[in-house]
Amino acid sequence: MGIVDKGRDAVGGRTLALTPWQERKVLRYVEEHLGRPIRTPELASLVGLSISQFSRRFRGSFGLPPCEYMIRTRLDRAKALMRQSRAPLCEIALDSGFCDQAHMSRLFHAFVGDTPRRWRRENMIAI
Image 1 (cartoon, rainbow, N blue to C red):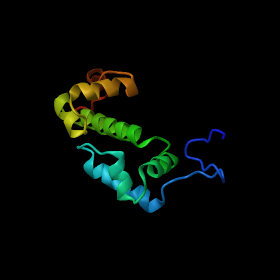
Image 2: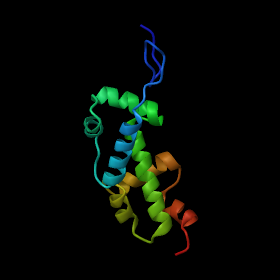
Image 3: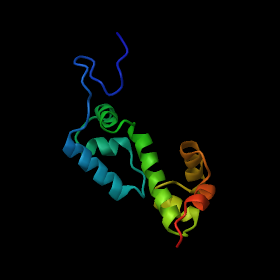
Image 4: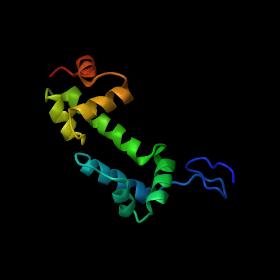
């Protein structure tokens, strides 16, 4: 049995993706619930797919696994909050759906390549 590209059907070679209504429903749900933990089984259930089907089709639609998509979305929200407010980083971390400031800082450094504090200083909009 050969290796199959992620997001591709083994038989037809076509890309597997969520349907447009499933994409909209998942994105709306993520946006509305980003401040709390969101698990892949929860999203799969939302659109009536098994966890493995959902994960494969999600990756086909968005180019990332659901977990990484959630991290990047939370980091984007944190960046927007850091740019636009003087709220403490611990508050921004919680508002963005991270467990705590340390969790946000670890992921921020891993994905962005800088600490939240330094990034904020360099990218803050004058308030």
